[in-house]
Length: 243
Image: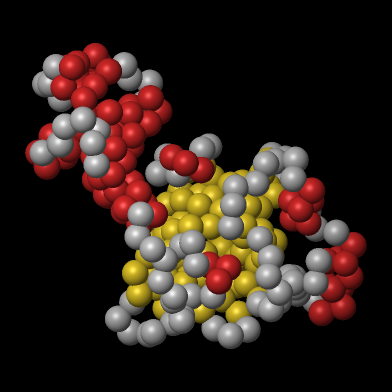
């Protein structure tokens, strides 16, 4: 069993469980025996492309979901190399995003994936955001998916995204650099809500590791007196790294 087959098998198993299917049910849907599917999920045998495409179709996920699982597993086995463009905070290329939605008193959890560099600008990478996920390990199962770019600058990082299904829906996230080693950063999220259609702006927390809902740092997502004071003084909403 190698890393690729193991990662692919785990991804198929997790996806099958998320779809509430048994091994026998999925095996029947892809016209394979239960024994063969079990070996796929354990990484004991290789999966041909046609079968993988059929599995993705039955489980209703893009083929990229399985490709990403392979990339994540294999990247972990390669010694890390210095990247002169991506700041240390973003070097894992996978971050966890949080904002507080007071409309339903809930914490919105999202996953940011930083991808390959763009051809136009050295400090710009392609990126994706999977918003409002139930499980950060299976972030492909999300309420909304966005694609776009992330630009790294000395004093600020800017993220520009558009909705994969409805490109008219765009979001921006701006994160000021505080020049101190930290596991979290506070940014300003700006976009359009469709519940109802309303332009909005709020605080968003970025973290290099998943956070529990009772983590004290998440309390900073709620608008406080200092935020209101700046709003009254400047007549616009703003977010700083002094928190």
